[in-house]
Length: 235
Image (cartoon, rainbow, N blue to C red):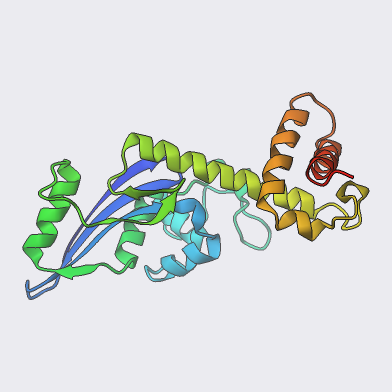
């Protein structure tokens, strides 16, 4: 099969736009892929599953190959069990551009004529659309449906939303680490708070302000929870 792929980095280690065209050997049809990959949404097991389709047993094997060491961990700090100690191996870095190109091959695309696929790929890569593009990311960020290729403002918006999601996940983890009967919940229950997005947003805002004034971040969290609950449910 005739195959080619373009990769564009939109945000290092996070967002990568891929365009892939694969012509069948008879030249009758082609598969077209155009997608933005959100790397942070893929767990290591999920990436390993994709990489196994390209002959890599796990992510470490891919990193070794990308470094030109085959699958030999030479050049990295290795533990007694033979695994790579990533924290002690500064050169252990994922080649995200190469990874994105492999993921583009892994994804299923749209079947069309070779000419249509080549024209679409050229229009996207050269930034000269031949027609309003029917291809878009099938998801919404910040209440907006974003299109491919992303504009600079759309990239900024996506990154802002993803950062807020990460901060909220961190807040939930910290709340979950508190005792379920911690007095800061004022009898409302830990689960009640974790399932109330409005309360969580208020807690996050107060916790950020309290942390800005110093002090222990856990005690600041308890105070933010207590004040937020009292404000929402006055006695």
